[in-house]
Length: 254
Image (cartoon, rainbow, N blue to C red):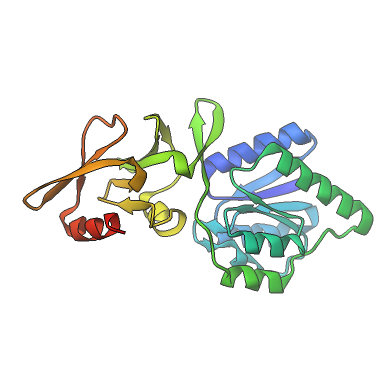
């Protein structure tokens, strides 16, 4: 079986490749692609050699649904992302499967088995349904539930509810869990703030930091300066940008 992975998180690519090898060593990953433009070109030119595509929704240059407005492609796709349950249930009626990241072994194995059964019985496993794509585009998205983290050669995940802080230094972003542990992640603060995190729970206090409201022990003011003391041993207090102090107070107040 030949598969293509369309995904812009390197940790997610590595995890998926490892899971595929564990499930079926005969599976060949033809390519891993991180943009709509490159994915459209590759799928169009290699469609005869591709059996299955794993497709994240949010890519580096837009939504992956745009691929199907650029090319004629009707082979099997498994979406791998974090969107609302209504869209997931709707899509399950028209596609191979729809998996939430980080992907779990048992769920991926079930999806692969489903694909093999459909392919052997119909020789055309659930082609893309254009109306479902339109429904997904217009549907309400949910916020990210889990984040992949890397520990040496191992890839694990941490639940968003257990994350106290996202902090960036020199364009490298880390997350801190409620037990004070620090992990490297493949996201920018801009993407976290705008697309992935619930704004009721997380607030970007400065260019460097996004905090979980449940991790705030107290806030201290000194003239126009506000500092935040967290429940984790960060080593220093966070300073709220002056331009965000009022908005931060409103956020704390609900």
